[in-house]
Length: 367
Image (cartoon, rainbow, N blue to C red; front, side, top):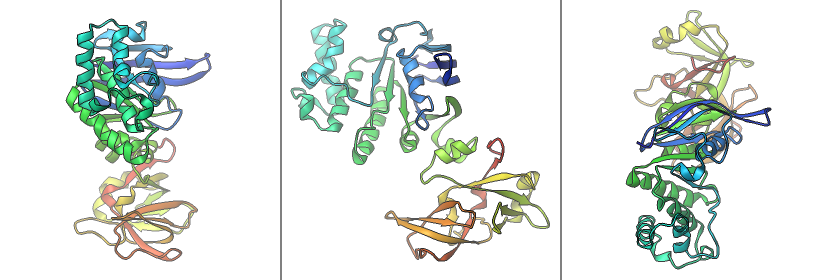
């Protein structure tokens, strides 16, 4: 069982800078887990500590039931794929794939079998005689993946492996790595700052901020039930909209946006859920796809409110409408392409009340 368990893992540099603090994550055998967060959140540091490339300052890391705190990287039975391909330019693809196995003195026959098998899985078997300079970026990344596959490790570690590829290749390689996981049935831990990669690839996602784990859950649970404002705003594209204000319960339940005359009437059926937080300073969160110009059938929506259209961004089958409500903040709605609003003109919008998120103003925790 190649499970990976991190218990109270921390990393402090020079006894001053805390990069990672009390990380507790249990990764199951054969699971694909994605570490995601903004630059500097500690995700690559966590991965490097699992690999043994960074010494941990506190806590324990276990791989396959064995504590590996003091185990050398080469003895942890892991394989790592980096952002840069790290291929030997003077070696052929075959030699690059075989190099690690030759160092470990595997028999020639087994090396050849493993290399041919990995090359066939990745569709690079016709490039084995080429040098890396004769390959495209996507092909080089496949070679880097193949070099990890031939090792047949217990755990694969990926450190932003698609960052150097163009947009189309990134999408293609995302699919390739997901397919590879299903085929190999091996534990994989993947680091990225791209939340779309995280959402589309991971069985579970670990969201980090400032060295602290914010939430660990499935992609859809994190998307629909973020534990705090940071997670709600980081996961999702375009990002979640946030409005500061209060909900009052004088005769009728109403959201009042702070600093503007904007008020949004809330349906009576939500009174029991929202009355306990009445008159408390809150942040209302709503995703762009839950803002409408025309109320869809079966959706319980707030009363319409007037917005000033600032930018209209067509993206094919839908449009992103950036608008303001007089607060100085800009918000975005994801609307259908029919009857796009005009820039600079007022436009009526409404919210799907069942999809709003309420966060505490001080702690930013979900209420």
